[in-house]
Length: 385
Length: 230
Image (cartoon, each protein chain N blue to C red):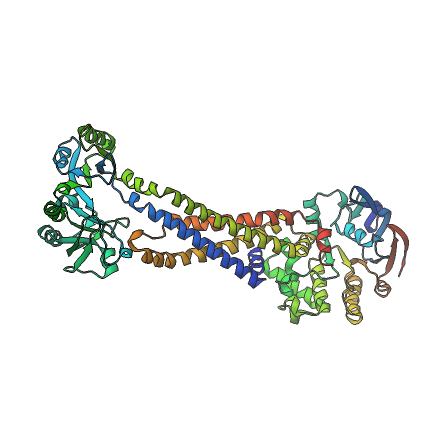
């Protein structure tokens, strides 16, 4: 009790110094948390992917289409329970900064493979019936203030012209990790238009989404699909949805590694700042520690005093930094919008933040505590004189 | 060893090593201090009087010789045992008071008692009694920077006697005080010695301060040159 009281009083002895150190800690822990959250958000698509879905794309490149005729052949392969397809639309809503993913899909089969997109039966039916209809995720609808019946004009970049979609449904995610930042519309709508304007681009799909009965057989089924189209004009590459998403993430891996490195460098910098503070503090109190030792307090008491003070400052700064991260992440998530659709500070990131604060506190006190526990009492007392 | 002596020093020498060179500070000192005595250690700067005090207080180790205090040869004790011995047997009074600035007068006086098994209530009672002895009960909740130099030294004296130590060591206790306040502090020490029978060893430059002791021991260049009643 006395130890805690003394270290508490010591911690706030130089209010400005402690305050500035704590501000540094708050900023560092907050920045650390935000950067870790950016990395986590980047991998969000991977986390939300299903183990019962495979993605089949062109073996040459994702930018090459596959014939629609493959659908029936894939569905007939042993182990496949469902098949759907989608095309990346890549349109612009009002201006490029309003980016969000849009996919042309086969509504019935697609929604059957994505049960986590929760829509009412009425919404589904309305979507199926309206060739120019679309469904959107709740976060996306909230962001732009859309409601059922609204017409969303999207300027095509891959598919020329302005396309007007009527919102027939707004889905909510079955889980926190479900993406609610997409717009889905009828593949048949663009296919009909393409057939009229660009006949050779009609009846092709970007990727097939393949439902499977047994996740453990994913590799075997993937092999069966790719074997079925071997030596054809459009060979396929089938992988799990997770591997497909990881392929996207790996394109920006260098950036992610840099972000992770910066997040750790920030912690190391604040560790050095904190260690400097604790060393200065210990040096100033040399005579006090010598006095305590002269009175009979063991060296361990001085060690506990310094570690306690350092940990108190570091953990308090860490906690404040963590608390500040939450509103900042929320604001940051809103600012970047659908670029990082699921931007929230995870429990793991919070634990890492407090872990970093704990390590900063321990490392910062290590040297001064060791030094002060070994001070010569006579030399220490002379420090006053 | 004298049977009555509380402190019995024999053949005590101390040398410091500076840049591979041995610098002798104390040379073959023999000294007995009976229980209840009040000794003033005097001598010019560098004579070794503070070193002798530090050795008696158990915060420094001799190069050779023995220091028996209450029958215990403290020169042979380990660091840990010496710390325990100091906590139980020695009260310290320093020139610059050496109070913890973040603790009140009461908390500063309570410090040595934290190393005992006393309950919080018992500790408070002891602290109250010690502060009464130095007439500072009305300032017990004040921090050192809210007290004058004389008051701070009185708090330090209360801290030195609160655990009822066998021995009180005082290093220039009036060195940082004006004459009047110094007199007050010396009167307090005199009172502790006479009324409570505390054994006090005090280092001082000031002959007037030394005259308040019962006995003056003079050191010069590490050698005990004179030992006479004050």
